Image 1 (spheres, one colour):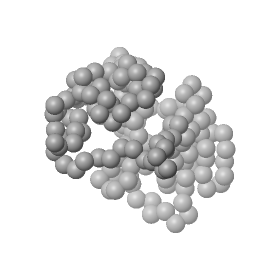
Image 2 (tube, one colour):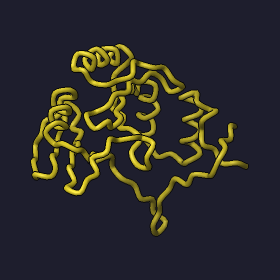
Image 3 (cartoon, one colour):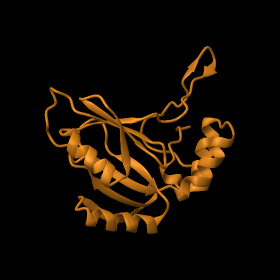
Length: 182
């Protein structure tokens, strides 16, 4: 059993001895400096469609995935470029099929003159990092390594310990599993 350094992370929200949960991610809202520039980026680069325009914000839907992204322009916004070093969003991770698809995305980003870092390999697999016009960090990451584990996770209830065991065994990431110290 591997023990991770640092604090214990509690995972279960309960009320009246019943577990609370949520059904998924409904949407992500990003603060932008120019709605038109951002809308152009998210529609032309990533294939979103703007479906609602509130004047101060846009709701965009990706037709293939159903993912909803809202772009908000705050009247009193600072207009300073995004940095993942500030508390808040680090990056938004988008799913890709595999490394080959990442290389195709890399070529598309190059053709569209989008700032990106070439495909990199890490402990969790391959990823391609890029930025929107405000410098908001975005990432393509194939979840093929996690697909079987996620399918199993969705198929039945797991205790926290069973989930940690699955992460350790199926993903081969024992050194990173957040275990409680005994």
